[in-house]
Amino acid sequence: MWLAAAAELYWTTFGRNSAGPYWSPIWLLISGLLLAMGAAGYVPGYQLRWPTRRTVPATRWGLAVAAVLGSIALSAGVVGRTIERLPAADLLRTSDIVPALKLYVGRLLNGEQVYAPLDLGTYTSLPNYPPMHWLPFVPAELLGVDYRWWAMGAFWLALLLYQLLLARLPMPWPERLLKLVLPVLAVHFMVLIERALAGQTIEPLVFGYYAALCAALLHRSVPARALALVACVLSRYSLALWLPLYAVLLWHESPRRAGQTVALSMGVAVLLLVLFLWPDPSSFIAAQLENFNIAHAEWAAPVVPQLGGPQHLYKGVGLAPWWHRAAGSDIDGAIQSLQYWHFAVCTLVPLLFGLWWWPRRLRLDTRLVALISLKAYLVVFYAFIVVPFPYLGLLNLVVSWFVLMLISGR
Image: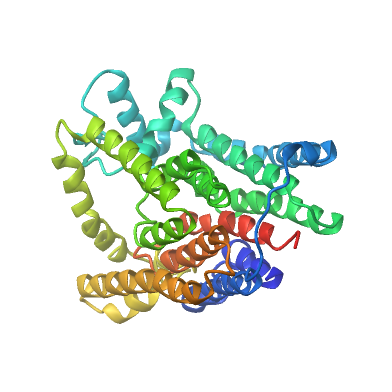
C-alpha cells in the first residue's frame, strides 16, 4: 500500500506525463486502484475504534497543530508568489473561474438573481456552478480576501482535520511521523507542480469538502455525514454514482441513522437549490447541457507540440488521449464514446464493491468500506473524465491520506 501511495503521488506530481500522455494516466490509475485494493484486503475483521479525546496525550495534539503550521510555512510562499503573478484583475485572461464566482457572490450580496447569464466582459457565459462552489466565498468578499487564499485556507483546515484524527489513533511513533509528514509534503508538491491549483482555481475548497466527507464517513454523526455529502454534491456532481452504494451501507449500519442522514442531506440540498434556482432555473439547466460544447472546444483546441495534443487533454492524468487519437474528424463521437465508458466504469466500481462487501458484511466495518470504495470510485472517475484538468485529479491524493491513516492501530 505504501508503494502504491508513493507511486500515485509520483504520477500525480513530479512524474506526471513522464511516461507520455497515453501511458502515464494508466500507471496513475493502476497505482490508485492498488492502494484501494490493498486497503480492502486489510480491513476484514478490523473494527475502527476512536479513543476518547481525554486519553490522547497532549503531545499528539501539539504535533497535529505543528504539522499544519509547518505546511503553511512551507507552502504559503509558493502560493503567494503564484497569486502575485496572476493578479485578480488579470485573471480573466487565463481563467474565468474566480471572475465568474465573484459575479455570483456580488449578485447575492446586491439582492439580485444569482443564476442568470454572466457578463464576463468579452463574452457572456451561462451560470454552471452549483451553490456550494461559490457560497463559501461570501465572507471572503465581505472581508476583502482573495478567493484563492480563502480556498487555500479551507485546504489547510482540511489538513488540520486529518491531523487531529490521526492524533487519536494509536500507532508506533515512526509510523505516526510518516503519516504526519506525508500530507504536508503532498500539499507542497501540489501547489509547487500544479500552479493553476492555487493561481487560477478554487479547487482547494473542494478538496476541503472531500476531506470533511472522509472524516464524516469514519464517524457516525448524522449531521456531519449529511452536511459533508451536501457540500460535495453541490460543488461537483462526481459522487452521484457512488451514492447508491453508500445508501445501502448506511442502511445496513443503522436504518434509523440512514433515514436521518438521507432526510437531512436531501432537505439541505433542496433548500439551497430552491433558494437560488427557483426564480429561474433555466439558465443553470442550460449551462449543464452546454458542457458538451465546452468539452468539444477543449478537444478541438490546437495541438501543443510539446504534448502532442490539446493542452488540457495531454498532460498525463486522464485517459482521454486514447479516445482523442482515435477520433479523427469525429470528435463528437469520440466524446460520446468516452462518456459512455465513464458512466459504465463509474457504475461498475460501486457495484463490484457492493458484491465484495455483501458476503463479508458481518466482518466488515461499513465506515471503512465506504471510504475505500470512495477512493476507488474517484480514481476511476478522474481517469475517465472527458476533460482531465490536472488540478481536478489531485483530489485523489487527499482521499489517500485518510485511507493510509486506517492501516494502523490494529
